[in-house]
Image (tube, rainbow, N blue to C red; front, top):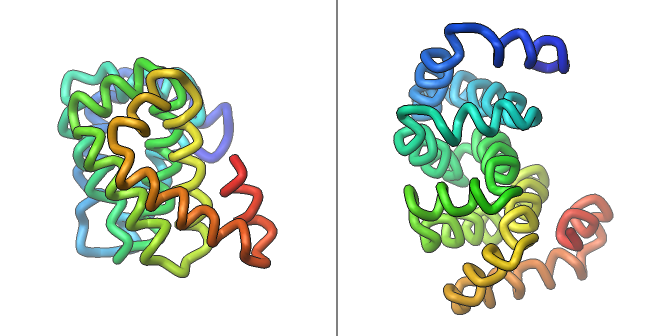
Length: 177
């Protein structure tokens, strides 16, 4: 799934629904290498719009989205980084935001992303949490979600301010998104 051709091949294969279920189930693996790599596969699938649609309209999308949300656990930074990217891609459009919020709840999303920003020194985790937040906030609907959960969103803004004051240029760029 690391190339457009590979993603297209996988996404257009008849086995894609089962492959996504199997891959998402492995997000909770106790083997961090496996969990991180399956999160990477899902993240790479979401690079393509077809990948996002395949996950969001999957007959087990509720299970898949909850597994992705659970994968945002900061104790597994590699997995969390890849899961945050996948979630960011899934919620770039309002359709994805509505689906994720209805399945997981907006509070769970904001709380998980806040923990990723606050509790982790892993730079990739910060970057992809900022990316997912920027995807969430890009539309009127997404901004309304932020205002509805203003207490956590205020804390998120304070953490982003801290990132902006850091000397980590790449993290600053992601925080500005």
